[in-house]
Length: 109
Image (cartoon, rainbow, N blue to C red; front, side, top):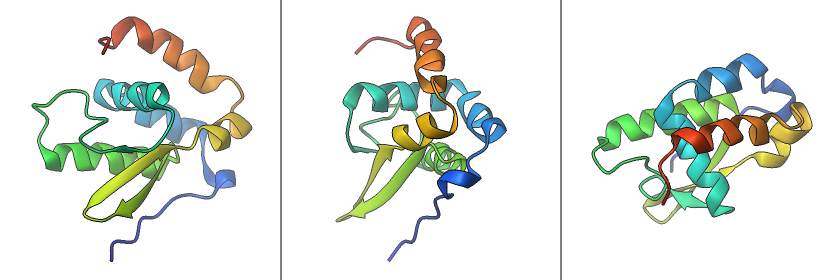
């Protein structure tokens, strides 16, 4: 069974979060996850269908290691949820601010 490594809330760093969000694809993934307000599959949060599964998996690994998401296995699918409360506790208002700017760049729908 796949074991996912998630940093403890106290180990989430600002540089790690901002570094993960510096990539436009990962920014769009988090933007979609914030809109969904729940668990989403990797494919469901994909910024575009042309991204290879291996590339998408790498993006989710980076987001997970930065502490932005929590991944769990559900059958054969990985379900991802935004660690919004943990990020808000560590860096109040950061996600809201960054996603406000991202809304201007991310496609609707």
